[in-house]
Length: 272
Image 1 (cartoon, one colour):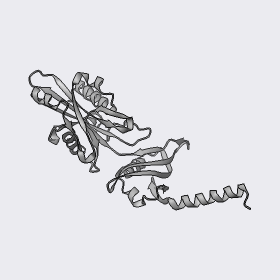
Image 2: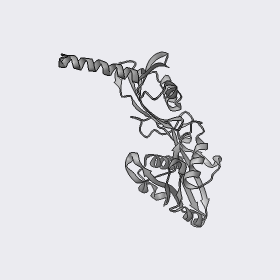
Image 3: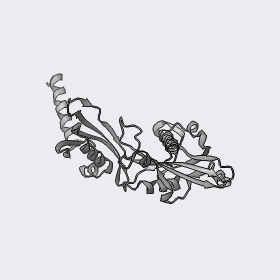
Image 4: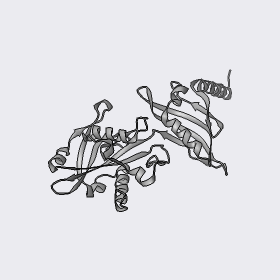
């Protein structure tokens, strides 16, 4: 008869064997070091993970950070957007080079996005308005979440093109790329990708743009409560046109407030 301790020992060994069979192991190069890479989901291949642009961007950025050392990376989950990697969650064992101090390294890797502050000026009154998109945001448990138009990057690195595309999809406003002002670049230079809303756990950066236009008041009024969104992406958006001076009170969204602040500061410094 197998006693209880032997039974637990046998089952623990069996679990470890099964776990090893369910994982994929390899190595990646970071700062000249061979870093062990473990992929836990057995249905996800090494090729799929290494094809993820956002994961590769993280590796390249870690290559430039000489104060940190990555000892290992463990991919815990992958969400596919069709045939492409959408979101990727992984844990990196990272220490400081000088002290060997362990630093937090759980990363939700979703990559960059763009957001556009829209300012519409009335021809008749000169009053300025902004455009908020109101839509359901499950991650924050909100049925009606108000924010400026925004969208994920498509991997092309063409920030302004994606911004123009998202603006048309979410508001119906068709604009040429030269009418979009890159607030992030204007404020921080070309070396900064964007603002980071949650750097403690997510790699997402948001490139902030400005679109200004003067329209007939009737055209501005037509946008109020307009239904928009890309049906193929399950978007259902209602527009809310608010006075620019009240924008900060109508949305507590981080990218909205960041874009508004950058706009006001750049305007004050005569850079717009």
